[in-house]
Image 1 (cartoon, rainbow, N blue to C red):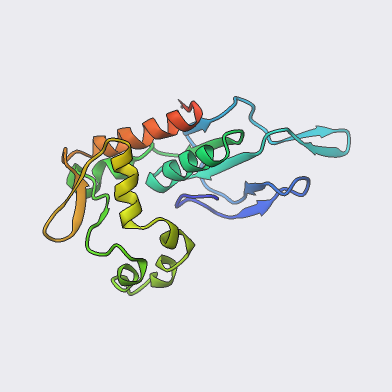
Image 2: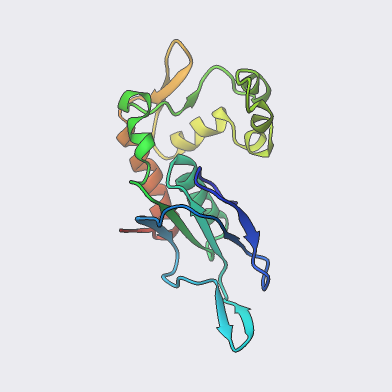
Length: 186
């Protein structure tokens, strides 16, 4: 699982099958680490490369998908080290979305097929595995379970009842910290 908009590519490590990111881009300014402080997933011994005892997941992009994906991965696989890299401020687009209120999901379509029909480009992606296992209804339940109530407006957009994106940002960061004792480093 690798999330985020800045993804250039993913290739398996030749030694252990774990995945690593490849590609260009700026050096990230911030990291959200979920797990132990060790920074490498492989250890070189002479000409042999041996995997360390814990897998590492690098998530490129500290937006909503990246932070959510990192927290979810850490929940599913607690022994895995998860690092989120972001060149800007974590969740910066979440903070400004919906005029600072954060449009979380849609309340018009609970099923993926009618939702996909609303997108002329990209509708095939919305029919994929993720939306069959985690759609708008699941998003509402996920936030509700964490104490964030959402409201549906007349046009179907759903916002936190606080009308503040900070509610969503705090929830995502709290979940990331809870899932894996995260630390954010500059």
